[in-house]
Amino acid sequence: MEDYLEMIYRICREDGYIRVNQLALRLNVRPSSTTKTVQKLKELGLIEYQKYTAIKLTEEGEVIGEFLLKRHEIIEEFLKKLGIQETLLKDTEMIEHDVSLNTVKSLKLFNQFLNDNPDVVLRYESFKKAFYKDDSL
Image (tube, rainbow, N blue to C red; front, side, top):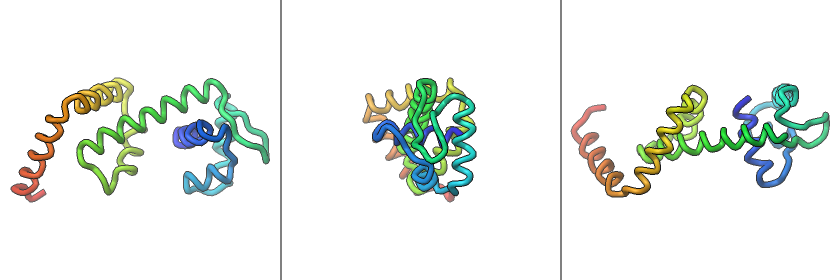
């Protein structure tokens, strides 16, 4: 459900609403399973939705959606700094659902530290090249 709410937040932030078929397409799932999840999100009071109408976020849904997107972006930024490319989205998705709030806060702080100290990033990249040159992993 977190993935659904995060995507609803992403789209509603731009367009103000999203429809079930659009959401299913964006998440690469069937509209029938999307409808079931949307109904659950409605029951939880996170979205406004009537059959055949647009999906809109409630205030609570917007707050949670914003948090979910920020968490995703923090983890993704960290993995990018590690040099993860090919599996970036998959790894981000897997980590974001099992990570504690404390760890997310620490990753955010560490990302900021790296942004403020680009020399550290350059040193890490040099270290990584040398490591993989000599390592069989």
